Image 1: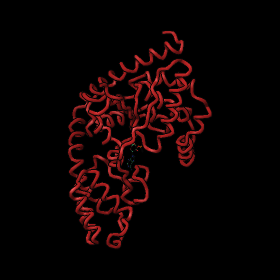
Image 2 (image 1 turned 30 degrees about the horizontal axis):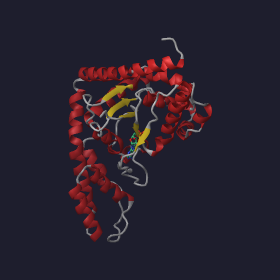
Image 3 (image 1 turned 120 degrees about the vertical axis):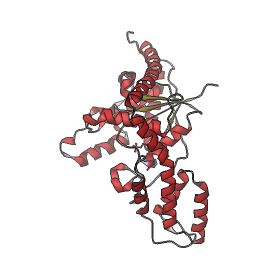
Image 4 (image 1 turned 90 degrees about the vertical axis):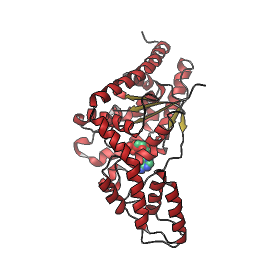
Length: 335
Ligand code: AMP
């Protein structure tokens, strides 16, 4: 039986934090045998917000390395760099012509990002057409591979819905061709900020709020040690968000025996938060050590990385070229 295709992408916006890893990338790694996986580092998407051109190429390469270090395996999955597959942008134009201005105007992420730009003010207060049409490029990313499933978080549901609408409209106008991509929901943990556990862990909150996936051990330990908890609740009472977050980290690292034992202690009211923190820090350090080693090793052989990046993107280009060829035929373009 042929495997269903899954498509998922990540922007090269600097380092991955443990929230990105446990909430998204780990799942990509885990489903590699179950699905025909196509993953991408989407550098063209990173151009829709103000960015520094001097860093983009390096950030893209580093993100490619980081995904390999986490366990994405180019012999089992395709891992492309978006700008190396020009068919994405060609299909975007064709899709722009079956997408209405009205539906793009309703995208809440567009409005949120415009608000972010407004807040930063000054020269950056420029809203590009690229930011507006971003979801069309995203639809092209998915449909150029005729993907059946896209792992999504709540924030991306609206964009996936738009991709489905684009597929349906295209099919109605030019004949049945694209599958309607469905969301792939998986039970992934949501990590909260260490310094303010009422907020989702995010780099935009600042250094002390997140742990980078490749952070040195002493820094990981320091951040976990100073993580916000509480003054101690009633035995068996409801856990505070900071305590829940440390339990979530231990469980996400797969340290289930410790997680169960600490839960028992919590229920009895004998849990010491210093023990909870030590075990959370140890679990993280042990889980992340091999990633850091693999990253260092790959960073020392950039020519090999470059070769892998181009080879895997060439596989993606072959898929994409075939689909674009069919699309051109159907839409009446000269081939
Ligand atoms: P972002 O860079 O925020 O778009 O995140 C990339 C991926 O990581 C998305 O799939 C997010 O859902 C996931 N992610 C980001 N932050 C967290 C977090 N704190 N906990 C779990 N998953 C997260």
